[in-house]
Structure formats: structure tokens, C-alpha cells
Length: 113
Image 1: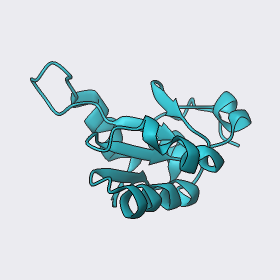
Image 2 (image 1 turned 90 degrees about the horizontal axis):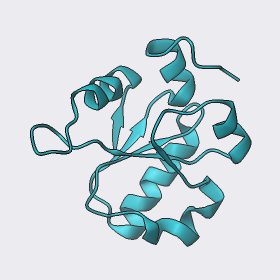
Image 3 (image 1 turned 180 degrees about the horizontal axis):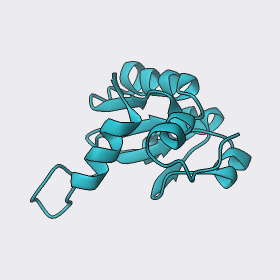
Image 4 (image 1 turned 30 degrees about the horizontal axis):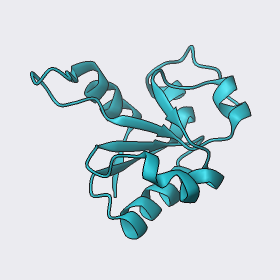
């Protein structure tokens, strides 16, 4: 698993093009609880709480680039590691600093908790 900073992810999202003219947008896998996602979230997330990942991993494309997201980066790192080691996902990233880091480095208008 690779680490990606909020700034790097923002740049990737800003430069992505799913029409073949640029790097495809990654799957933004938010593994936080429902109440956390309701508080704040990046646009276009796929929400699967950490406690449901084992049962729902088959919903994810193992060939897609996936950025795992949580509050500060700890839970998402565990999920990214699980997807790599248990399911053979090869293009998994962990958002270092999580949504808190995103709010501090990219979008200061995002609520923090």
C-alpha cells in the first residue's frame, strides 16, 4: 500500500479524466461510520464502514486504483492493508491524515470533528 497526502490526492482529482485523456479518477473508499460521513466527506465517495469491509470487499474492483479514507488515516491504513494482503488488490493508497488532513491542507471550509 502506498501513502498519498491530501495535496497529492487533490492534484490527482483535479487532473483526472475518465475519457482516456488523463489518469482515471480513483475510487474514494471512505471507511468511516455513517455519522462521520454525515459530518463531512469528500465528494464522490464510496462508503463502506470498516466493520463491513470483510463482507463487502467483493463490491470493489481489484483492478481499480482505490484511495482508502478515514478520520486521521489509521482505520483506512488497516483497510488498505487488508485489501492488499487478503484480496490481492495491487493499487491501493491510504490518505495520510484522513479527512482531517484534507480539511487542513486542501479545503478549510470542510467541518472538522
